[in-house]
Length: 447
Image (cartoon, rainbow, N blue to C red; front, side, top):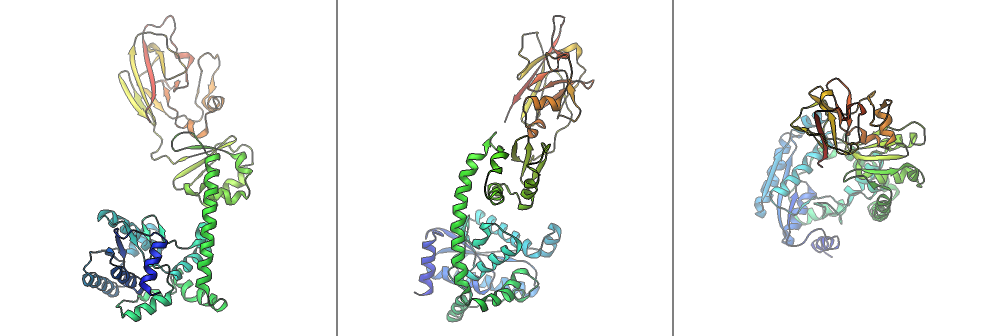
């Protein structure tokens, strides 16, 4: 079967895209991306060409861009180019040049795809790239997902050359006499991927000359195993993660501790929430110890908080905790997910344990303040003679550690806690037969 037929078959078998869809090709000017471009042209697909100039190789980088521009003009297809000061950006973000270049190009490709209404971005990775990725992932540490290497299709990125090995790419370039440019940095072992390609893989091929075939077969098995694990953990997650609201969950630690193998399953269960294995190892080291309530573990997007026998999973708060919001009669103020209002009103019988209370105006010092709970806060709950710490009050109501920081506490101008909204009024501020003027406080959850 000729190369073009294999290319078309690979696209069909992996359902990369439909013939009528528009594809944005990421073209560096090297052998792989130049061959991919000519295969798209020979197949008659609709495509445009995008080129990133990372400004890492001086005049050579400019010559790469010129070659790709001429290729787009020769084929009469749209051409898009951008440049980055990659070294400076890598320093600012405190990451390697390799990682900075990867982030920059992937984000630009996706922005370009959306802006010009392309359906997918095509990247010119072949089987040898997949092997390098697998070895790189193993070196850095990975779950099963990292062992399948590079997938033919992921989100809006496709890799239509994954049916080829490097030698086949080179043979096609020679046969079709295609013009390309070698990136001399590809031959420098100061980059980790290059070290794997130039030093490690040749040694492995001495042991197994059919290394590419073996790795691709292994990658397919790992992908099937990964799909099986994903299906199992999805079902397990639906069973164990009890929704508290739209974005947060309660998870029984006892049920998690019964899992086997617990470390692997814990990692897979929490992987969608960006928890690293190190953070989950920290959780494993303490979750059977006593007096750990309130201990928390963060990912870049979420927090896990130990609350008695459960874990509370929720997104990290986008904004810092609010402090001291003043409130006077006739006003309403937003506080987290609540709206707190104060109104002068007539004396009426009000149930003081829910979202509306009435307090004796003569006892108030304005402005009142709305704030979060603080360590040491206390009040006298309605109907009790003695005082109670708010921390103990939250425990008595079984309010999770994560939720108590979201509870609005309405404080008098003299520092007394008037209302733990919407749970309980302070007994000192209730209306009595002697009350002449009242203020009605209301707490409404708005999202």
